[in-house]
Image 1: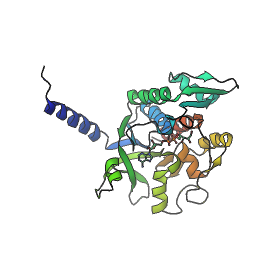
Image 2: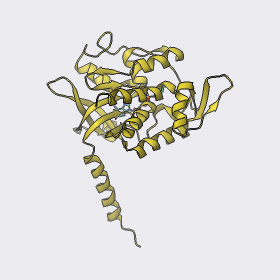
Image 3: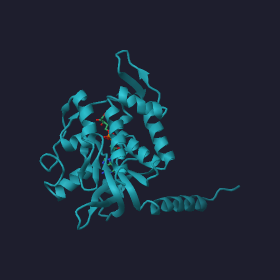
Length: 259
Ligand code: 48F
């Protein structure tokens, strides 16, 4: 068989646009494919929901690939180890009871694979730059653009998608919440109505607060992972990733109880 470049091109264009057309009206749109976004996507897809992750970079995984300071091992605690066990990510008990390590590459690739096979769609290389809000004051969707457009600083208008819920899983920068706070100051479900901001490193408190802070922050908008602590004023925790995994699962559970 002689391979034809036009057939290859058509296969890609048709395949991509079919996927895109099927993803214009979603149950849940997740912004950011780090550990919290991936676990949320996995749980929502397993429940049969139409769920998409928009990831700015080429690869999902966020801050998990690099473990701590590029030593590509992650640490999880007992509660989160159960999630990794269930997903077939191998963990090793550390010599101090209650701590486990896992290879970060195995963790990212396995969770991603399970999420995608469960039905979650990942659009990589796409950045979320705004949200859709109509008269009822509730988030109805997202405004998206190619990351390449964003990086080049080109003046190109974005496109929009509709969804029932958005999860901001953008990590430390809490980007979706930031846009909402800028355009509607004082309206977040936080103590001040604005972004409280991430606090100093304190893993024990941070891990617990990440779960507590995983909730709706504006009508139709949930926060998960580090974005939850950045929004509600929790500390950072460094390269322990249990809170991220548990937070993604909680965001999915809470949204599933509503749709
Ligand atoms: O930062 P990230 O890994 O988020 P997370 O799930 O996990 C945090 C940990 O990695 C670590 C930590 C805890 O151990 O402190 O930092 O909270 O992943 C966030 C992802 O969101 C993407 C970004 O490229 C990254 O992969 N992202 C950020 N802003 C946007 C975005 C945006 N506007 N549109 C699309 N993707």
